[in-house]
Image (cartoon, rainbow, N blue to C red; front, side, top):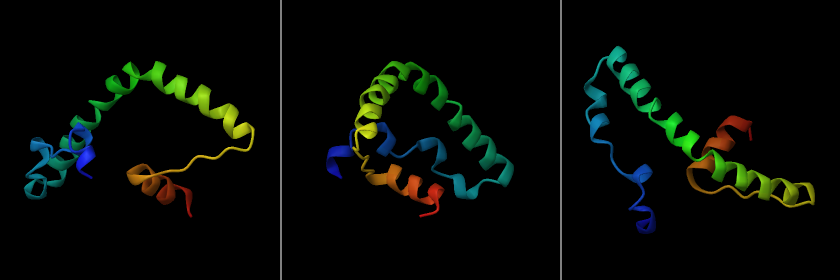
Length: 82
């Protein structure tokens, strides 16, 4: 996993380091605060996401498949009922 060490998604968030000592209200507020940072970043990447979708869909329509790895794989499996 060393090749992922430079990614900010793989780093420790100093703001959540003491989350286990917070009250439920404080935890929810902290999570909500952190979640609010995601939408602007996703919006800035819409052209790249759309390009990926435009590239993937024709391949799927021609019998291709998507192979999930890492966290996204676990997320997909947990939400799909498999």
